[in-house]
Length: 243
View (cartoon, rainbow, N blue to C red):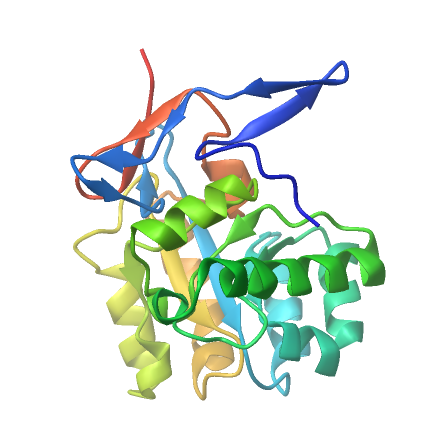
């Protein structure tokens, strides 16, 4: 089970729990991380993995070609169906993220059910690889105050996105490339959403990465983009360092 120590993140140091200086509350809203306030020209690329793995090897090879590490948010069903893919992600140095066990709309279930949805994937991945997941993306991007509080109480950083590739709409290769590389929200600190198993994503990936690189962006996993402590959020879900 995950440790619960209140509504903010805690870290264990020298056998004591230390409360980190984080604040996800803006007004009366609890917000996930949509993007990060940074002067560095870097963006994070993420994949939601809830179905299929036919193009997984191709995606891995393209990422390797560009020497890019990304974040995979996985459902429990995907982990169970594709354990070798999960192990390959760890082997290649990518982030593993929690996308819930059943891909439910987390706003429609109870607090105890939310905990079970996260714990199930966390424990499964840890048993399979030894990896401790600490990033969570709510299915469908659906959240409310309770979902975000649950994530933080379980020592997860809740992650949204600022650039949606719309690859899940199957508009085609050129659409994915144009949507990402010319997105109005693309900029330092952006988090890009793609999907493993979408029809055209693997085919679009090489050119998409090339164009992002040509624009001067360094592509990193979410764990290297976000702040782990001493931050707050603005109304748009941008993570900002505390002064």
